Amino acid sequence: YPQPVPPAEALSSAILCNTHPNMLFSVRLCVAAVCYGIHKGCSLPLQQQQEYIPSSLYKKLLYLVPRLLPESRRT
Image (tube, rainbow, N blue to C red; front, side, top):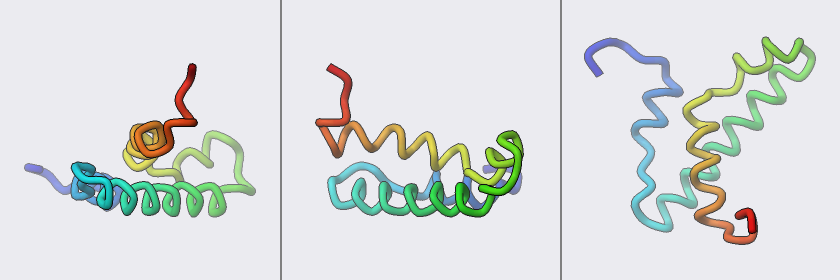
């Protein structure tokens, strides 16, 4: 990146999803980050809660879950 980026964005870019073990590690990390954000912002209004959940890691989680858990896919 030509400019400084937030740590969550840098972490999301550094996470590899090219092999099954990497995907498992990535999904664990993303779940932990999203759960931490939910826990940290649980007493705040909804708009402020979203600031605690890193959007890049949330998007990566949404990408990984259907690939690792076929039963989570829509039929």
